[in-house]
Length: 226
Length: 308
Image (tube, rainbow over all chains, first blue to last red; front, side):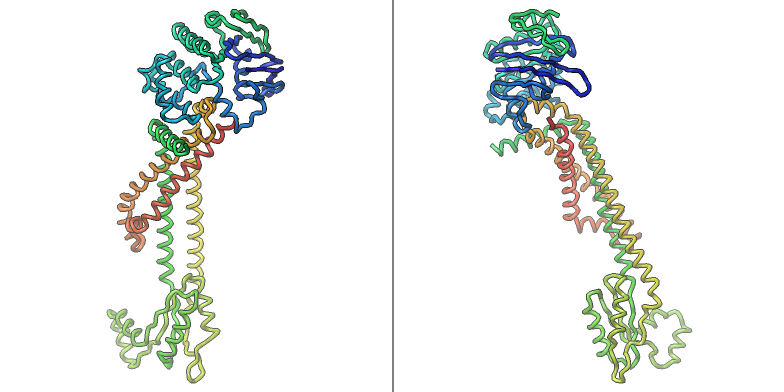
């Protein structure tokens, strides 16, 4: 499903942020990408989302060469990927309901579809009673659950979560991990980056370790080892 | 489908504005100041034009005719002058009317009236008072009269004298002053308009800068550039419309207050009457400026954040 072919990314005037990364991820996999801060985890995700272009090598998403995507086609491509962020990145002047509905509106879903799907997703992330709350009225864990709701509302092929538990307490971290595991069990590919050992061990699936831009380990059902 | 998209952009744009809090208030206030400056510039231009027209109206050239010239001959000259494109109006004063006017003017000057009575005959000439459309055109009118004089039965010109030569310097200076005032006024209007537009642009840019993270999120959830831009442009337009309505409302008491004063200061120009008389034009300029400023400033400000 995803294939990084000898991918290197250098930023101007710096050494490589990622160097010669080759990896493949199959459909329905749950992959944790671990490494210290600055190891290159987020750069890897940015390359997958076409937020950045590789200096060398190629990134494939199914049969799509992500490097060659023109700007005009990016939004179509990104609709196939649900993003979850460490800092939630909810739109502050939209309610919880509207934040999730926005993702559906953006892809042109009808009002009827939105009216039926958004309450369902809010129920799934246990926030049906907070539908009309603005992000400033939600706790960190609630914000992240809204972020996950927004990511899955369009039933994407892939969920990419960049440090999704980085700003959460242990209880909320556990809840978020359980939701992501459930999403994966329903057949969606999930990639998360984290440096939380507890999260990786709780997931108990494939672990790719990156250190100073290089892939140093790739273990099926691996543990956090650094 | 298209209607659904437009409806969503309108609703989202309105919500952005309504929920924008301090950012919306600040943007509306700055836009209000900008449009108020534009409104003031409209008033200033009208005041300037009125004042210059009043001054221009006070300038004329009088053509005096010999006492032997018949009224028919003089009216023929009047007809010829009225056909000239540079002439605004020509008024005829007969020798008798001139005498009556002279007596009225000197009603309190017994010495002059006594001297006039001693003369017996009417010493005053019939005349034509010529007003040009622009003071700079008097010279060409005088040249026309001199180049093609109307002759009396005796073969002499019926024009006795034209008071242009002695007034030429004053008229030329006045023409220059009017032109300079108009050009300086125009430059001031343009400079203030550009300055206020730039301030409004910067404010809208700042408002959109505060939304840059949201724009980034919108891009990542797969929103097209048009779908991201649309609501923000609508927000800009709403800001412009609200500011324009505020300015149109505020201009009325301002015009009413200053109107009473400008009547005295500027020889009858009433700002309030001008505002009501030209409301459609002022509404169009203020509202149009608000809508265009809001929309164009938003388009330019967002573009930066839509680059991949």
